[in-house]
Image (cartoon, rainbow, N blue to C red; front, side):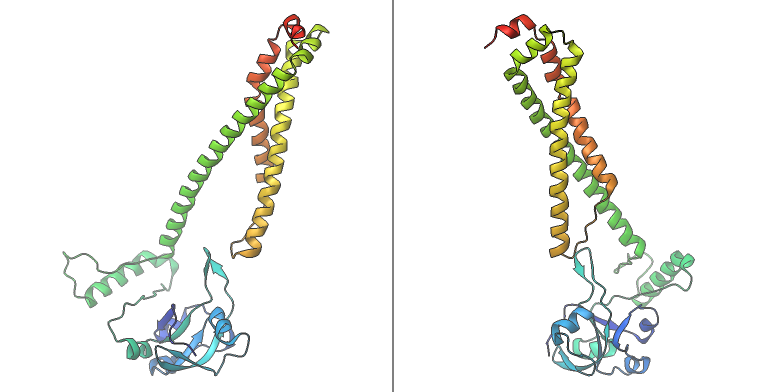
Length: 289
């Protein structure tokens, strides 16, 4: 038995008609039990598992705020959303909650239109009913909030858009830094292989041959780094999926795009070292130790 639950849902009988609970064990509270404020409770899968550790929960008794409730059913496992568990809740009749907590507790009212096309009309009717119940004058603003599925989707879109812009900025900065590192490496390679480049030019290698040699090396170096980063990211995603409720998926197009971007970075930042190598005077290059 427990004394409190963070997610205690108080319901009217009408809520059972469209709440969408899927029952795994037992049943939902009946309309009669809700109307008469019977001490019955419907548990989320996670709550039942924490309390009874796999043992049958139906017909057991739990204590909520000092009052005893009989378990009539357990919900199917729902998993998590945005890292938040959807299985840790209890459902009790509204009348029972008011007896324990009083009638001044804040409430969340769920309204479902008969026709989804009438969503705006239903919102207007709900706002009118709440304003009338709260005796608000036309000049007074709403002292309540209305949230719809579209509101949640807009919040998710805004979050996704902001996260996308942030990630693009971080990735762009990483690519620039990586490109500068590759350019410095290739400049060092050109400096250390001056005699080799001079010998190739003395034997008839053209400027474009030297340029393609350096570009090929810088692009290869960049692609190897991209492949290593992709493998590391894949392993990290699998670890996160294994130890957290967050899902992970690897898309083939993203792998191809990532490696392609690294190749482009290697090609772009290898141009300056390649041009510098191509401009070497073969005679001066052969004289260097």
